Image (cartoon, rainbow, N blue to C red):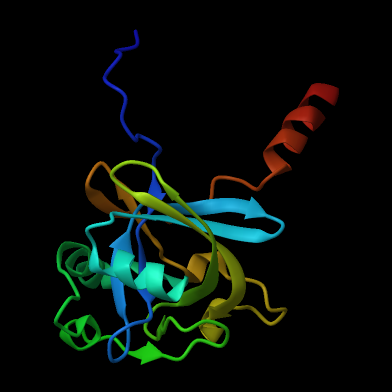
Length: 191
């Protein structure tokens, strides 16, 4: 039996990322759970930010941002960054994080995050409680221990944070590969 409930944003899980923006002495950052891939070519990411947030003001001024993928060990910093404002304070210092210059945009990288994705805002849509920023990916940075000898991402070395129903979760178990499960099913039908 299915139970119908009121319309809500129940796409699960969603990433909890730190989005950094330029402005102030060394920039600011906030936690965003409304983030995702918008297009593969050109590579586009989307982040949704409430207009009342200080980072929204900085995004409007600078038109670039960095999506910093935090590790599960940084969940407390991710939570605090999402529940406090950077207006009039230095969140980097408060949370013991380091701002690094990005290679292509004015927004800083967060050094302690294992993956940093630099984006230039290409579109902005006012949607209601949030504005959606769609950024073109112009550079990606990985901590070297996340890459194998061939430069491929070692998935088991990455522990991103997922947000589900107001709770933080970590991912971990590999269930299959894209296309591999369909191929195995087809091969099973042949035999």
